Image (cartoon, rainbow, N blue to C red; front, side):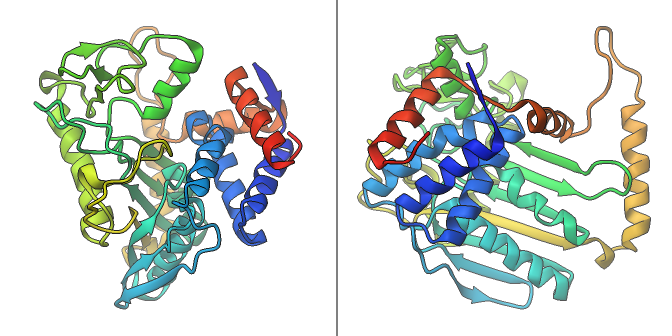
Length: 357
């Protein structure tokens, strides 16, 4: 395990994005989104993903200088065409459209097509916080998840993030996959040579497995809950909602037609839409009640939940966003740890493109 400063990893990521043709402003945004994942402890979606984006670019599946534009809109809604751009860049553009519409109409809702993997969902929902708005961020993803009772891979991990401002307390930031675990967590276990917990994966025949290579071997991730008895039908429903909002609503690919993130798998030759889809929402707090009043009550809500009586062996009740915020503070001072396989991958990437790692 090696540790790097934020500045080191940001510069490398920024320079790599420039090398593959991103304009300066896009390289800055893309590096910021990726590094936000590493800083918040979502290591599966940070710089470890950089080489994956580069491979997609090499295959011609990512346009690093896209013409991102609104193709349909009303005063409070829009559809954005990402022009095959990096989702790391397309998503902030679309979230800014949602925020702008909310500033005028009270709420703003934007569905996106023709995009790619957009990093961590929480980055985009949190953009609304500084405007005293509630932010919502959803995306569909590579089909690696089987619906309840199926062994076919029809859905992505399809995350949901909601960011809610408070006053003196830190904001409430929920950021979660609609599967029992995100695929990135499996990738980390694979790099460590460790098994997955029961309930994360099923094998190609639909049987439960603890192999962290279960998906690679033809199996599937399981919806939130793991199995029917533990509520997987609820995770399946949530993942479906994300898919429909992100893609059926925008004109992106949905279900099994979503293009895979890995470059060695080709997209379906008969797509039902364009690229990957996202969905964003921004709600102005003062469209409901005075912002100061709301945030004061959010403080009260957070304090009450923090003071909840704990179960044996647990020190405190956490508020969504607490672990990531605490880790971000720690990593600002102590740096970002990278697994040896990630360091090797990035070093080789840098050598190939003449960017010092």
